[in-house]
Image (cartoon, rainbow, N blue to C red; front, side, top):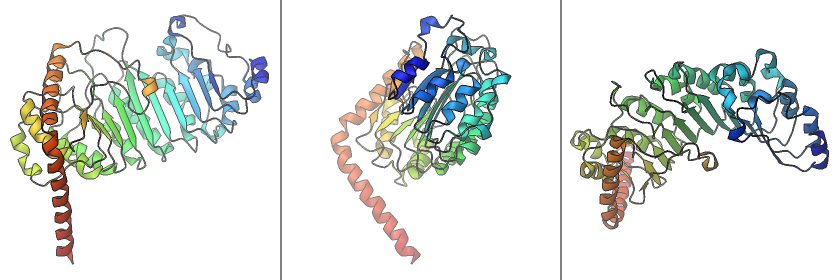
Length: 387
């Protein structure tokens, strides 16, 4: 690699990611060569490395590279075994790591080594985008994510984009899946500059309408919000209730910059229960472009369409495309068909609801304009009353 470095001094992207068919190989931890070759690459902006092959001296060398903007610790099959990566002797401590220009960090590893030896990377002063993926395991998911987010909220106060994913197991699990609780993601609410938050798990996030209101009030700058929108619902397991359609109201009220929203809700709650909220005239801003609720429970497309008619702008489209929104190039492993009959039926009914909204679109454009004028007049009246 030293020869490569000397001949490629202008190299900007270096990728050591192994093809998946090579995952069985037990490569030497030094297969990427001596870290000295990095000193020959002053223009390097991106590097992709399997985590178990990154020795401490390479981290130290990378930390001094002034142009390095992206570090990706690529996943590899053997890294599902926490003993294969980040052994104690490779621990790196925060005061040894600088990374003056690092803005994007991708971490793929089990929870234990993530805590043990990747935490120092979070202290990079310019870090604004963070992606963390941990494999599914028997460990409590909520506790894992809570500890991770507590660390992130303390180390990355200027974070703009945060994506968390618990990867799917290669074989079916023999134990009940634990849903991630809202309490686990509460530490992330302290990231006041956050504009992107995406959470992916095989089970829906356990969050109530009141907790959704708390989340919305803390993230007024949020632009992309996805909370386990594609999780499968296991009808054989007694799970806590999902948030209702009413959980959309605080998001509409507090998040004026929201462009994409992906959630799982219980849309079987009768819309008549929400009429009091509808009468307030609350609706999403014109910034909202995509709504992904299509894995959610639904039993009356017409009622759901009538509700959405009052709260979303006429140009909003339903999203049926799986995967991470803010990193489209990294979504191939998220794509999966809806094989479950219940999910297929939900999809059919959401499509029917969308068709109803589309049929009314010409009238909705005019109604939207009138609603926004009424909202402005109402605000002006309140201001006059306060004088």
